[in-house]
Amino acid sequence: MKRLKMGLIGAGGIAENRHIPAYHALSEQVEITAVQDVNLVRAKEVAEKYAIPNVFENYLELLNHVDAVTICTPNKFHETIAVAALNQGVHVLCEKPMAMNADEGKRMLEAAEANNKRLMIGYHYRFVDSVMLAKESMPEVGTPIVTRVQALRQRKVPGWGVFINKDLQGGGSLIDWGCHLLDTALWLVAPSKPTEVNAQTYQCLSKQPDQVNEWGSYDHEALDVDDHVSAYIRFDNGSTLLFECSWAANIKADKTHISIAGENGGVNVFPYEFYQPKYQRMMETKTKTTGDQEEAALLQAKNFIDACFGKDTLKSNPKDALLVTKVIDAIYESSEKGKSIFID
Image 1 (tube, rainbow, N blue to C red):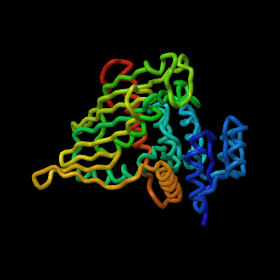
Image 2: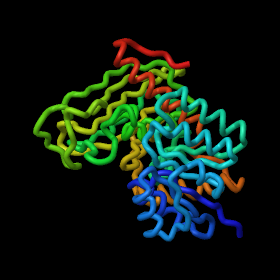
Image 3: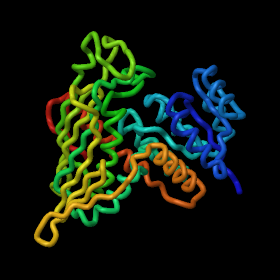
Image 4: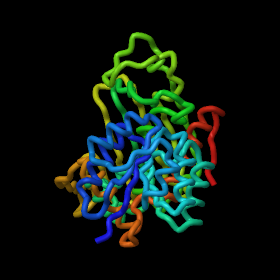
């Protein structure tokens, strides 16, 4: 059986902790044949640790030796690398978000379509057990009325990497963490399309000196990204989405929440619960689901590999990812201009 030759571009934590374990678990279908990082010492360390045969300092050289790549770089480089790979006939799994903005995302999508290659964005929450069950439940929920999303962390600004650098990442809590649940919610309520965004971003708590922060120390003066975001999103069918995310909230505990109240029923995703008026009373259904991130990463990798071989379609497709980026752009623009932004 032919195995997909996979290259890793970026050898940081997300590559080592999410993608390498998933590909090793699927070793009958995929082999990691190359790794590249601008930090060549780091690339060599990862290659030696995981028996990856080829190490490159330049990702363009790597593209000649693989069938597909997984992009794990700062967001600023997603578009350039993805377009180069796709134009060379290489499939791409790119970590979220798709790009720094929608214009970059459009160029990635166009390159994938022009070259008939797979482009997947790493919104792996679509593969979480309770999310997949919620998606199956949506016909019984009916047309969404109000969707509520909260991606809140209690004092957990990432104190490593380049997460607080706007030039390299494009944003903070929204583009790093909130985007996962935003993508999940938009997928669940599809085909409803967001049309208008009114939002406010904040950069307050994380700029204070003497930080209480669970995820390491960072330079509060250098931080130039959002640490909290709230948004009100309207859809083409009149439904709405109430969105909030934060890295550094003054709250009792972290909160990961998606719920959808529809015309015929309602669903809560974390944990999974389904609500429905029946027999003249409100019925509540619960079942055991997992929130296993490793399992979700494995299912994401398998879906991508199968799609590269023409055996499946992408569950996280680039058109959906581009829509998420359009909403993110609108959130930032709305906050900057102090008015609603319409999405075409």
